[in-house]
Image (cartoon, rainbow, N blue to C red; front, side, top):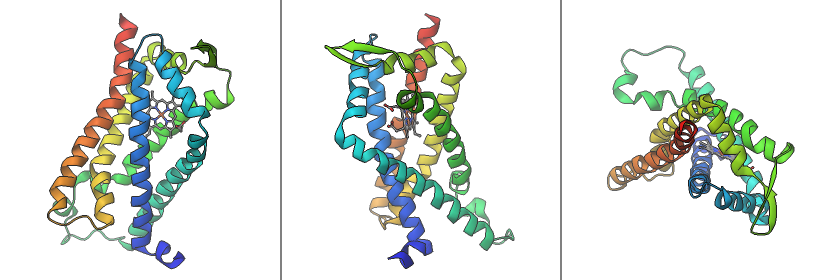
Length: 226
Ligand code: HEM
């Protein structure tokens, strides 16, 4: 087993499995975040955020999510460094521009930009909610952290965070246009029947993720001018 995981295909396999897990997380995270737009008191979002923070099942999944991110990030660097070492000379015959897309050749750089976004994002919200002083609010007779005021406060008071979050969603979308399809290809679903379908589903998934994560800062940016 350890022999397989250290082989080139084993490393790609780990990248794809962790990628699937992260893509699933993104959908759940987006659905909850869209509740920010559900009502202006923030009650719906606060209840959902509180549920996610206190539910025992979610508490078990949280460390798995951290492992998923770590595996995906570490193996992306290992695979990229191995490829750079194996190909120090740029071959003229094997023209990369004709055989691959710009995005597929630059996945590692898009990944680094997403990692920088993620560090900023964790400091903005996750860190403050776990280790900072967050104002509390009474919702339906239960006292909970006012996550809505933390998120809306950031987006309404600092326009440059809106821009950074929109850029983060765009980088994520570009990464996913290749990543979604590539994850299925690695597990062998790249036959002629499935290839066009998966490419189509990948485009729809990417539009939902980029559009959904962008619409939240756009909404608060507009609100800050009203
Ligand atoms: C408008 C965009 C977004 C908003 C409003 C948002 C909001 C939040 C909030 C409030 C938390 C803290 C949850 C808690 O600790 O209770 C959080 C955590 C987190 N977010 Fe986001 N997020 C956004 C986009 C993203 C994107 C694009 C990614 C991935 C690239 C992401 C990945 C994470 C991760 C990994 C955590 C820590 C784990 C967790 O608490 O679920 N977020 N986000």
